[in-house]
Length: 264
Image (cartoon, rainbow, N blue to C red; front, side, top):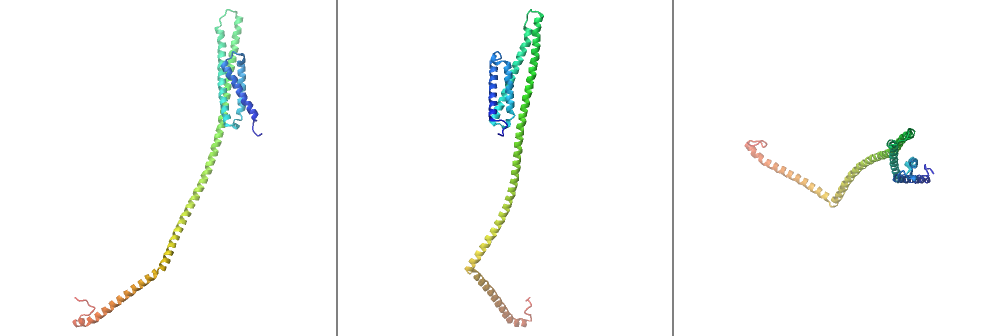
């Protein structure tokens, strides 16, 4: 109910376009001599073809892609039919212009004046038809420019929407990169804490194992024995030196040399 044209009207326009296209094709193949395909009828059919196509082009944006392609095909056919009719009009005009020159009769002047006036009228009509053909070409070009303009607007709208989506994606990507960097920093800190916790755990296990094996006691006893042994050896050496000193003092006294003075 909200569409610009009902499907029945659209179908009628498509049917009219097909009918007029068939008629113009028969006119081109049959020529202008038959009564069923006179140039006047062809001109009228061409105008109906143009009106129907213009009416359909107004809602080109609401058509399906295949219908838009079909509409473009009918637009090309319309241009071809218009070119053929224009060529036939020009040919008829040339024939009518050349006919009085080729006709050589000995009739009186009043009988010649009528063909000359007729040829002049035909020339004017041919010129008018040529101007109409130029007007139709300019109208078709204007319609094509309107169609290109609408197509460019749709393309620009698509590009703008794509640009907005890309900007949104860029913002989300920057946020994700920031969150990833924060997660990496926390992961490194957690790895450091886990490593130091593991080292503390190993130290506790080593302490428990060494304590269970009484290694600390053995180290204590070894250090105590070493200290006691060192003290004993030092005391024994001091006592031995004292005894030697006591024995050597009388000898040095006899020699008149103090014990502390070095021997020369």
